[in-house]
Length: 388
Ligand SMILES: Cc1ncc(COP(=O)(O)O)c(C=O)c1O
Image (cartoon, rainbow, N blue to C red; front, side, top):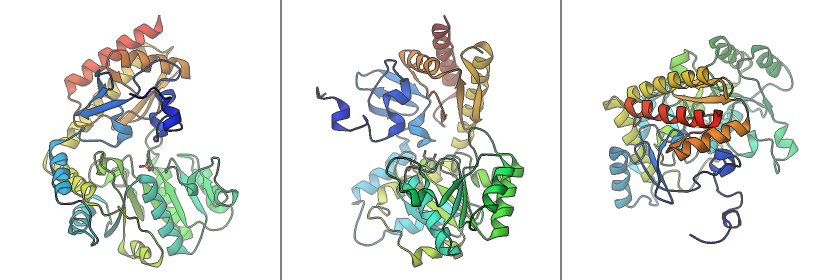
């Protein structure tokens, strides 16, 4: 390993902000970098093994290096991966993916979640001829939805963030300013949606002629066919998928009615590697595994077990944890404060468990019930150490 400070080589320590050591462990010592992963385990650069509850920020739902997904990706690598012509695989994956999205008739593929939500918003702006967008949740790092250094005031002014599950705020956001092009929301923000709020968003979008976009980058695939739209019984115009779709390979998708997706031909949404075949093949294999095995049932069972176990931890250490957030498929402990969460995360890592101290931990199909129980025991030991 180089003696140079990692932040000199990669400013900010790493290119994925949510993997920074201060995010993971605060000022506490903890493992810094990994060398490989398999199933639900990760190995650090000193060879230590961890049970991973974070699962690459939810990018992996079936388990790391899933054999079927890996085999499909390897085949695609051997077959060249890219070419000047668009690949046949793009159409195969499109056909296979559409039944996973209620009302899905057409799809465009991209590489990252942020890109795909930005593409959905672009489509909405083309279709409506409007500019303003209402949002709720996290939609990636790009300018259109960020309030951070370097984002022009004029861009910020086009977006009105809304509070989750707050119908009054939704109504106010719709009423103020110009009619919106889109209402973009995450169906789960630190907890399940109030179905009345989702329905109100649907009704408002229909009433004012805006495109309703569900950002299902966390819920999609993980929740099973139909995603959050099917689970909560409210159907958006566009659905955005990412993370679990590729099981760690870079792919995201915008899915919806042909009439809306067709707007892609009236604007410019294109990326050199949007059609590379390794991620397309991986995604096709993901859908195949989900359709032909009990993988998603295992994921849900692991999630239920982890959620219940975390509730027990919260009851046992009320001074450290004030509650649980999320849903069984992705949840988190609400720690009393930042220092306490950092100490628990570091103590858990010392016991071979990687736990994120904020939203979210993402159980996977690879977390067997007995392993969840053992992991909860190790977490209990970490809590006991921090509590004394
Ligand atoms: C709901 C949601 N939308 C968008 C994104 C951005 O996706 P990506 O980080 O792949 O660009 C994320 C990432 O965490 C997300 O959770």
